[in-house]
Length: 212
Picture 1 (cartoon, rainbow, N blue to C red):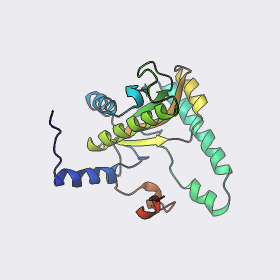
Picture 2 (picture 1 turned 90 degrees about the vertical axis):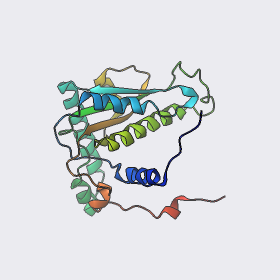
Picture 3 (picture 1 turned 180 degrees about the horizontal axis):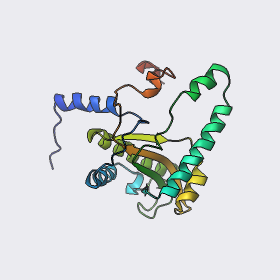
Picture 4 (picture 1 turned 135 degrees about the vertical axis):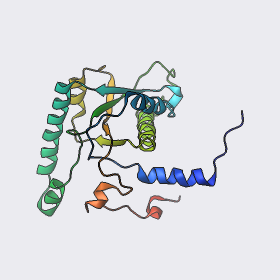
């Protein structure tokens, strides 16, 4: 089978895609059509995985009571995070909008089955955490596909994984990797919101290269 060739135009568009894949916190409330959302989940499953284990488990959270419980847990964890800061750092933190839980029409919790039968353990003997990393790859693939479709994704990490896992009544052997807010963004931008709000700036690219 001959692999496809990728044109310079595609290369430029791919770099644009990476720049426009942003963490979204401000959503419109209209729902993403079911075929589009199903397509994004199908594309996520094209991600690479250790030993072809495909350990990711995408859980759509539609129940209003469970969504409120997650929202309450975020509020609790965020208050603790704010209390741990002081001075201007605390005031800067308090001004940030760190989740789109109230407005996002879709919530998707992503878990990793860290001991899946699929893959028969290949590649996990010395680095068992590769199942989690595989799930992160699936999340990133979902995120890129969503950006192509004009859909925004926000990763909510200021929650207690154990409590949220219990709220969603999933297999106790699954690890919560991400809680995603999904929907159409109110204000698309190719610049990270934390940079636009003055919280942080990107480091020079050369800072990330280390030679040995």
